[in-house]
Image 1 (cartoon, rainbow, N blue to C red):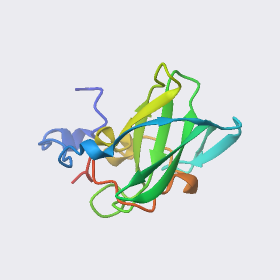
Image 2 (tube, rainbow, N blue to C red):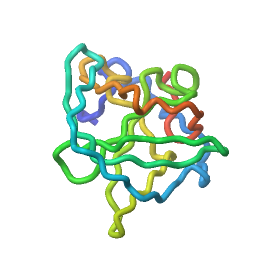
Image 3 (cartoon, rainbow, N blue to C red):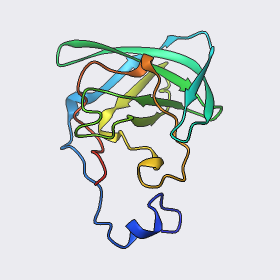
Length: 150
């Protein structure tokens, strides 16, 4: 597609993306602890700055280890969750991956790490991609979702 984030040269050789096998244990429905709405400035892949607002936090466990993520308001419905984890730079993209989620009707969110995807700048340097802030660097591996692009 002309809308693809793949650069023109890679489109002709593209054979598909690589994903982890689905992990039902990495799907969480969680209450959202409200945040203060403070602004966070994200560095980007092209040395720009993008600003988001903290919308909430979620706490969960991965293989018995506690983890926490901040949810960001982008000015559009839903939440943006940029994150890094212990697979970043090895099996997954070094700068991190993203999730886009919606709120559930009962003030919870469902975070499905099987839907984690690479930023567009992985495929073409012409994109400006927010780099996950330190508060969303997980100290656990998230072996779900999209793997590194080769």
